[in-house]
Length: 148
Image (cartoon, rainbow, N blue to C red; front, side, top):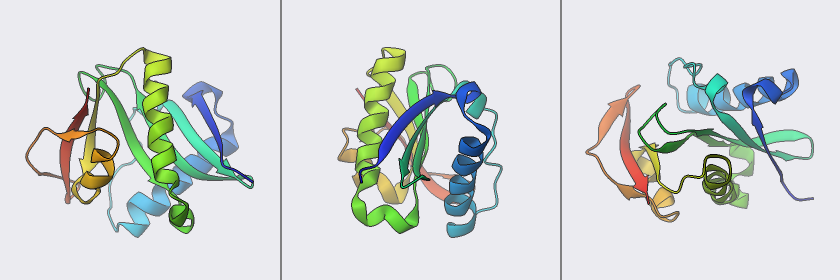
C-alpha cells in the first residue's frame, strides 16, 4: 500500500484530520524535539494543508502558505514525517508534493522557508539555497532558504 497525498484548505479538514495533523506536529516538534512553543500560530487557517495518509494514519504533513503571510514569497512550513516512517524517505516525497502544490495552487515558483539548520542538506537536495545567517527560533538553530 502506498502513501495517499491530500491537499485541503483549513475549512475542508475534517475534525479527525485536523486532530491527527496537530497530534503529529505535537509529537515531533514539542515532544521529540523537547521544545515548548506555541504551534498554533494563526497560520493554519490561512494555509493549505498537505498531508500523507498510510493505512488510515496521517504520517506526513506540511503547510503551503501563499506569498505575504510568512515571507514575501510563498512558503512551506511545519514539514513533518512520523518518526516511525522516516526510513521510507517520505520526507522527500512530501517536499516534492509541497513544491508542486505551491505552483499548482498559488502559481508561484519562488519559495522561502525557515529551515532547521540540521536539515540544510535535505532542503538543498530540493533546490533550496541558504539566504540568511543562523538564527535561533524557539532555541533551535534555523536558517532562511530560497528556491527560485
